[in-house]
Length: 165
Image (cartoon, rainbow, N blue to C red; front, side):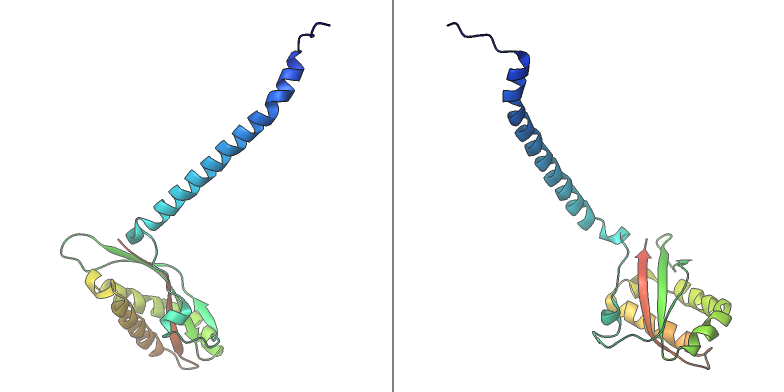
């Protein structure tokens, strides 16, 4: 008996596992390349990325429970600079000693924001670009705001975002 010629369907069925394996391999390579690109691009350009500081780092590594927290709106200010324009974009949160201080902060928010803006815009890049500079700035903000508060005090200042450009 002579062999019957194979139909197109039979040939496609034999090749389909090879095609699926090839497509799967290509997909894995693409995923690996995309992951590598994201990893490399994510680690470069650190100056444009916000510097995040954890609550434990801001309080000296203290792992105790946080008190009431008040989040402030974003601040964008020009920094003092002789070599050109620099600005700071920051988001700040306060840890309070007493929950009643939150209402008082809300009532005095224009005065508090004005005080913080004045403080931030009086800084130079080299004063706040180091960790010790940020620690000093936290203390200055805490002291400035606590002058306005009666019902409670700010225990800690946290930088949620801190971008200098």
